[in-house]
Amino acid sequence: MRILAFGAHPDDIEFQVGGILAKYANRGDEIYMAVATNGSIGSFRMSKDEISGVRRKEARKSADLLGAHLTWMGFEDEFLFDNEASRLKFIDTVRIARPDIILSHVPEGDYNPDHNAVGYLTFIARINASIKLIETDHPPTSKVPALFFYSTLAGADFIPEYYVDITETFEMKKKLFLCHESQQGDWCRDAFGVSYIEMLENESRLAATQAGTPGCSFAECLKLCKSWPAVAGAYKLLP
Ligand SMILES: [Zn+2]
Image (cartoon, rainbow, N blue to C red; front, side, top):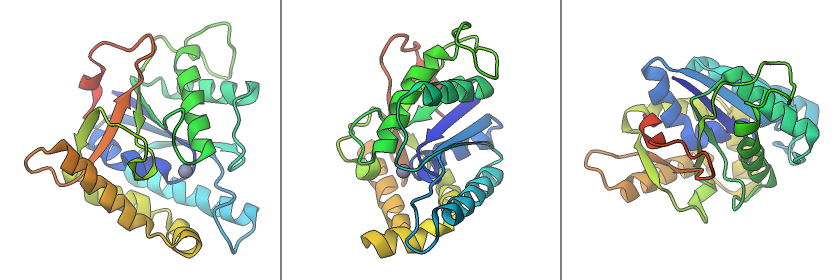
């Protein structure tokens, strides 16, 4: 199977679906990680160019650890908009991956505007990638993949539909996330007084508690994009 995960910033994918992607990787599926923005505002000490260079390397390290392809889309952090250029880039990214399933942010309701923009651009791209007369560098896809939206930060204003037990891959999820070393101290702790890794653990535990499955200590949660075509039996594509 082929899986494409979009994230607004380097580390969003690992935070929300790192465990799911590790499960896909363990069974030999082909994984594409697409990072929309360059993470250029994620520091209080470095310049924009410096921090985005660091974050690109961190994203590469995480993708390599997972055995995934990385698409660095390079939009400016906090300034991702729905326009012709961004639509074409998202469409081309779907065409490169030719996914059976896409995982992405919700199009509205998350705390960060880039997250919501990525959700909406993904929503547009999953169908438009298959349309021949919309031209990009890669040929159109032959089918419309299932699209699942992953949780918002802290699960705020997000009602999950599906839970994936990630107990077996939780350690790997943490390793992938910790590849984004620059965000652990300088950014979250110093700027917002938040331990990002503690949040990740708490949210994975909460999802497991909600799932209520015996033996499930950690989980990640999703909801299906139900716009036409919803793709019948899409939940069977989850690991
Ligand atoms: Zn983000």
